Amino acid sequence: MNRSNLTLTLLPDDYSICRLEPEADIPPWALTGDFFSLTRTREELSLVCSQEVVPAGVQSETGWRCIMVRGPLGFSITGILASLTTSLAEVSISIFAISTFDTDYLLVKAENLKRAVVKLKEAGHDFAD
Image (tube, rainbow, N blue to C red; front, side):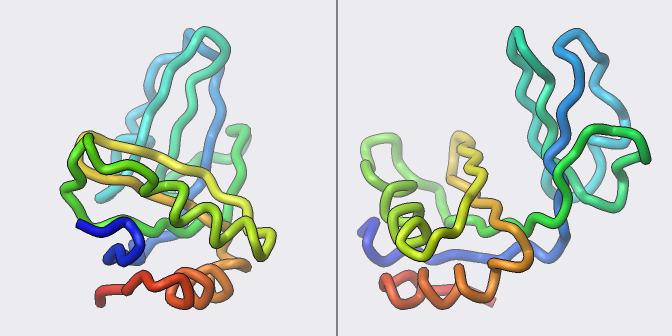
């Protein structure tokens, strides 16, 4: 796979990035939908989940869209995230990145999505339906 010509897919939902206290139990609402991510550190429990399930009062940043890199990607492939984030940084688009065993995901604010798609296509990446 050539990192300069990745196939990307736009996930259909709007997402929130939430912060809970590090000792908090994982809330059942965060485990719904086709895509969610949990990361616990000594400082926080960070959740990425469908925006529609986040209860009022939860510290969160809303309005994110998710771009998936079609995988699986081998661990020996280097520069995948760099090839995407460098293009977006050139037009001042901030990202939230998540990597899994098989692939990478980029979250961009919904208001930047169209510009992000245009910039990634200009950089040689394809979007699958």
